[in-house]
Image 1 (tube, rainbow, N blue to C red):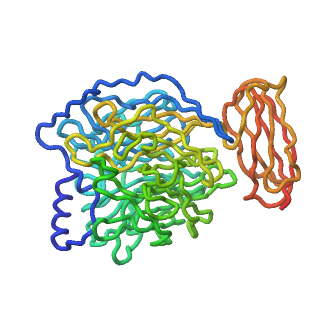
Image 2: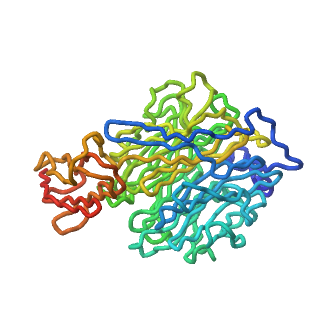
Image 3: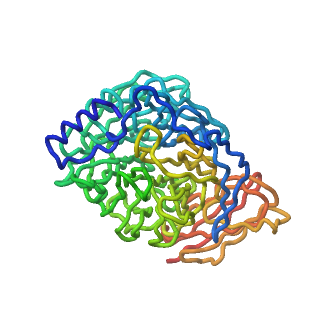
Length: 570
């Protein structure tokens, strides 16, 4: 972390001994001659090339091997985030905090072939001055905009050639800042299409609020810097995340920690803007939470936070526009006495929120911990959350793996899948004390989910990705029953309320799209959209979010097209 930021925090602490904690100020850059600690597994190489298959009642999921995105022996990669190009699903970009020799900076890793191959740079040229907290996004023009903490505060740079070269740093706000994320409005129907946003906490103020700024020219300049909220007494705002709604709504959430030690994340703050970030409707306490912040955690020499992450359904399906927020919590139902991943959802733009839903499906109060969740709603409306998990190890402080939980019913029920093909002994990084990064990432595209995490299995912290491929949402397959021809069957029951089953058969592998339309020809949801192998399929369709009436469902599989009518009666 920057020396001037640490200096400011020290001064502030002297003035007010109960001051809130600027979390990343405890992360100090390596100084002097840096030599990595020796490790017996330093030269580890992943020889696993196999794909794991998981079957559940309503889905089949395959998980590819864990891939290091940029294998490196002399650099540590942590605190990572992954974003996808808004129109080209083959392009993804990941950012990371990196330590290379005595330099603490920002790394970038990218793929242009849908995650098959990766390249990158551990020290992006604009960010080699003790920068921290990566916050990249990709705008409608394919420009990578990278925001981060650096001298003199919140800064950004942009790349028009997929990270090969970068602009110089551009200052968004000077001063003591912390914990930023970014997002770009990629909704073509939005008035603010192409506007990109950065959010952060302003630690220059006594009770740090959330700030926002935006760029309308792909990062060349930043304007619109404003304060989003005013924290209530005894609290401050930190760990902000941002997501864009289906028509350009800007949604921001953050934790409200208590202003005195242990700075526990006490409740969730939420704000929304329908004016391109120029005005806000703010709810300081959207719901109660009890975060897991600790300087040492689970008997590991590792610090953790309980900051929230946010995602929005942009699938165009029956839950289009739903907002999901997730965080690791404990000692507050539905979380147990150990750290669990808890989700809340809103179906009305953040006006009201559901009660908490426990995401991880291991036994309650079993002494196992789940932490650092990241969330992604995929293109079919599936809700996917990846996190660290030690459920498979017998004792506290033992090894940890990366899991992903997936829901195909809007977060009501979940299936857990182990996505890492190795485990690691959780600890702070060499030379950095208990610090080991504060979050991981996840993205999706081309019918796959991409959990993005880091661990030190190789002897140094490295960033990994795995390709998780679910069958289309809510679908089951009998690959042993291959029909002689392509067919779409009548749904059963019909009429129905609100569940019905749509069956179809594929005589051969094909790119398949199954879509529902209302009487006016408007789409009521894309149920299947992807490559399927030959077989007989059943789709369990839930129309609880639709009004009574006549609907049509259409199957397109290669040159085969068939449409049938169904009646919803409530």
